[in-house]
Length: 99
Image (tube, rainbow, N blue to C red):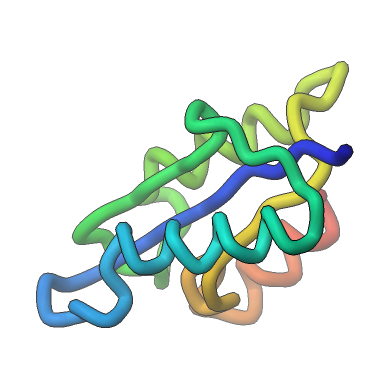
């Protein structure tokens, strides 16, 4: 069974349908259905933070730092929607190629 990390981000309080609990519930269902182990300590949450700049997202940066470790602590990163991971093309390209 592969190990997954989950990344959750909510930028404003108005995003109720994108709440951290809602995102985590959908990610956990996906992980279970696809036989991924998702330990609580590998759930990363940035709340109230815009996705435009990854430098201002501490949980995201912690997750990326862990992803670079040897041996790797997880095999995949699960997100509810890709826009939670990266909001601009440059960051998307950088982190996809890095991972």
